[in-house]
Length: 135
Image (tube, rainbow, N blue to C red; front, side, top):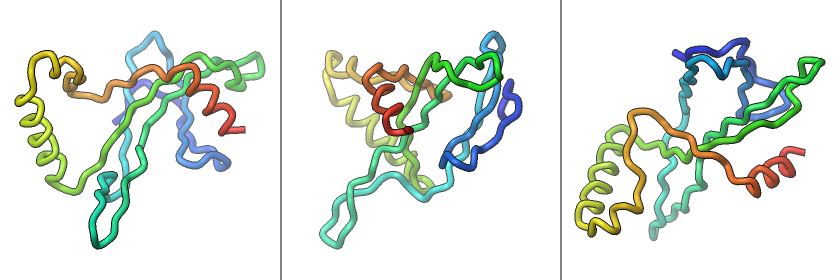
């Protein structure tokens, strides 16, 4: 279902990573399928724990003369949440009701909804931390 990507492969040395080539001058979209039960965890008296944020990150590199992807150009990411069936509908309804009760000034603090996932640029300090982590 992805469009505009070439030569996708999963490097054996990098977990949860997919690499592919794409032409930034053409329309490109990537379909990502997540296999997990839920990212929503709540504290309960019978156990449970708070979930760790689950992010999708896209890093763009420019190939050097040897064809290796060495020069880092851009990073963008988004937080995603995965729910059990019908859990997302319930969560969206609850969030909508919560926002509707707030003043117009408070509502402006929230991002608008989109039909597709929109990635935001990763800040410079985050890039440095990611580079240190990946070494």
